[in-house]
Length: 418
Image (cartoon, rainbow, N blue to C red; front, side, top):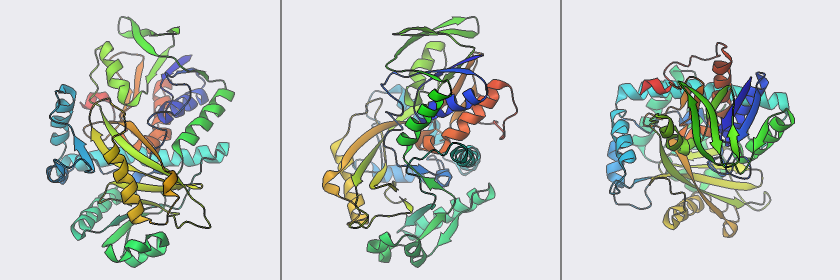
């Protein structure tokens, strides 16, 4: 049996890995020259079930109103543009900003994220793959008492679904991560998730792609999809600038570009790109005071991860279509906030800037599973949690395609929920 995976980001590569382990003859097609060069390239580095609270929650509309007109706000949506896709997405997003929907969507996201963290651990043990990983947990910090109280409530919800989270005092936050001492007197508290992780998603993706290639997976680089061929309710071929590719099962794992191609097959995927920004700066362990525990600054919607001898900071979201270009004020905001939090954290004069598109659904839950096109499967819409969910989503999808009962319930994760 042959499987064709469209996309070689962390989501596509892990799907290819698990399909190959299931006995499939796997080919991956990718328009770039290598693996993990877009959304997976320079993200925040966190493997973070602790971020399972959806963007759409009861507190978000109020925050969005507060951020209106601020070009450096954590979330910016270009509502003034003629962009029907953004408006449709926004209406569905607001419909999910209820307490009831937040609880449902948190459970669904956590179901995949916790499973994926387990799968990543098993894969690491099995293969010995190294990717500047850290297993020291993730610490969320809060300066505002009201924000801290809201986060405690969200943590209690996540705990009901199996995620271990610990509420910490400001002093305990400094014990966990001494590099926070410059803001210690500003903290209201923190929430620590000891089993969460961090690591370089791009390094992981390239190394796993190499292992997959050694195991027989074929990668076709610099290959752009031009269209599809159908026979009735089945896909018969993917047409590219390098010819036709045929398979028994097809997996769409193209992140933000998934809805553009799915449209050719009559499928409407409720996915919109959210542009995120990151900075990466080198550090000298003997000279710089950088965090060893991965940090999330919820007030500024930024995450910080130490990746070997580099400090990575990432976050913010800009809803402005499929434009991946870097907006200077937003990139500089990430650098400025990083220097404020960790003034001696890295060699900031050598900072590298990056922006990339993240595929966000209105409910923050990925779209995994079958489609009305009988042999086309979806593995997309992971939002900011693509690195977190990649292994679990890939293994779940491989089980579904192979006709096996998956380890977790796939209910509520498919396109049919829309």
